[in-house]
Length: 131
Image (tube, rainbow, N blue to C red; front, side, top):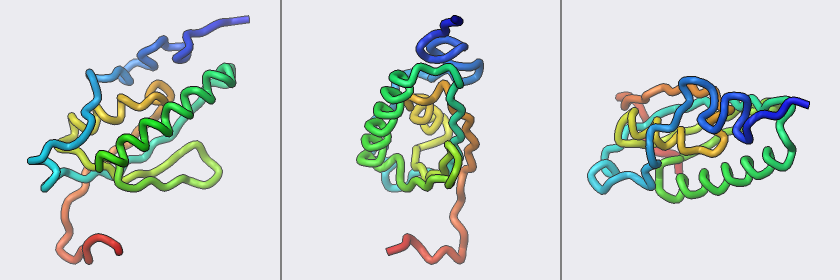
């Protein structure tokens, strides 16, 4: 039986290029809260086939808790599931791309994520927030 690190075959930091960049910001600053950047983020999760089911459950539970914190802080605005896949699309707010990277890399499932980020800009015909 082959054993791997609890964080997967690449160790606690995950695959190369998936290293967190320091402690996660807890929320937007007051200055950034009035004009944060918005990002459309696609996250696809690939769980290792040999992953311990208890570890997967723990990471998933930790991920839900972290997402709730980010939603409460105004960083995670919306989240949509892609039916039939371990994938989602989300609307995120951060002061800049560096802060967004710090936030996303703070997620417990980060080592198993493939992330695509699209920075968004205002459009002249945007009807504004739904509601």
